[in-house]
Length: 222
Image (cartoon, rainbow, N blue to C red; front, side, top):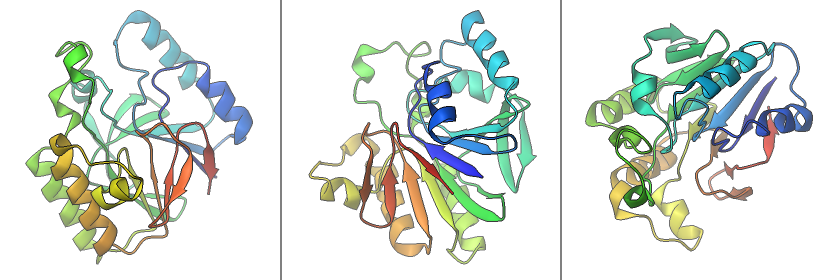
């Protein structure tokens, strides 16, 4: 079974809560919709906790959010996994790289992480904020090509933030700093046939138009 939740932000207490809430069983897959955060400071304490997670008998996957240590992630070698490309933090802990379609338990998942940090002015470049939080041109091209190769049809979409239209329908204003990303996601929403869309970033748990489920603490099991 596949379980999907929202931002964990490196909070160690979240994992047992998720395991109890789902519940997560051996062989299952847990997906975090960005701001995973267990490799943020990239220090000894985080690596000890990752080693603890490596002892779990299920797979942990995540799309990147805006609060990730992208330098640490990109220092890991890329490898093929389930039809896409990943960074492997531990044997069972995988970063799902942007712009790929993964096949998990017979279902296809398109991934497009990233978002803009509205608090970046309070953060230190290379220590608590990284410019890779927003996709690069080649990542947009790869993402579009991956969808076009599947005739613009996947089962599920995994992102960190929302399409611009949905942000407006929430009563918010899309931030101009990530207008390219939220605009791209709006194109994905209108042009792609999909069953469900899961995202985080907004620290809310609620269903949204477009078969989108905004997640923070809730866990959706497929």
